Image (cartoon, rainbow, N blue to C red; front, side):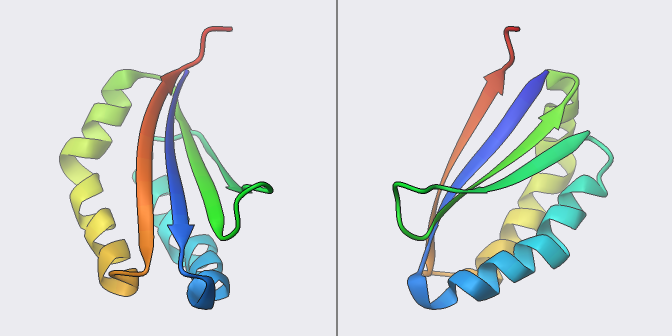
Length: 97
């Protein structure tokens, strides 16, 4: 299994709006690509206003397709809505066991 993870530090004033938008729009858009099997939206307890979104997929090929055909426009949507109000770190993992 491949896990694509995005860690977001969101501006405190937009935190509630951002979570609602992620739940109602962005995560659904990513899942509608049909390249991921599951997701998690997590709040870091030891870091204020920091969230982690993890998407699971069966293969690195699915992730590559996501990056090639969908990621740019979905990242742009996020940027337009919250420009200058967040920091993002992206990571990619392969599950060992």
